[in-house]
Image (cartoon, rainbow, N blue to C red; front, top):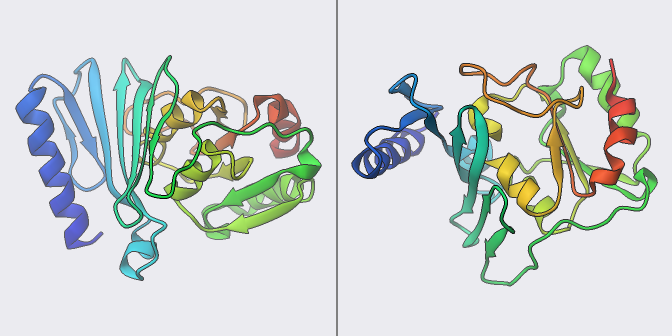
Length: 224
């Protein structure tokens, strides 16, 4: 947590409250307002705080909107690079970036050709690390780091799979609509859709795939 995290979330809360006073808000820094509202804004002002404080442009601001617990809108914004991804349920991904980029996930004919990304080995429990290792052993290459920026890359067709754990609602609420509107798929490691339950998200695992056809093979390797 930094001063920037807290002040950014407070600013977002003021804007949301001014325009949508009946909506709920859940943020990483200041918790929940208006419990029981049908529509919930989920805020992570700086996803990737370690990258932010060390000057690496791999962090981002995440804004998600859930209706009755299901993600319907998600935004990833990277202020240093000027990139922004906006996903809305039922619509194609919108992307803005100074260097271009084509919105949309890419096909991946087989797991052996896939690029797999995760933020850090430290996010996995010992049991989860073993399950991740099985998936890692079946793909072309594994890269570490990126936080939410990796999901933006997946939505541009530059990587194929992200498998992570220990995630909270504010970590994934914005990511699901971005990936799905780019043609990808998101679930937990048991294949269940990510739906808000209180302030949590099931068991905290997440599997994002650019090519949904690789879903069952990846889940089989991640199975407990």
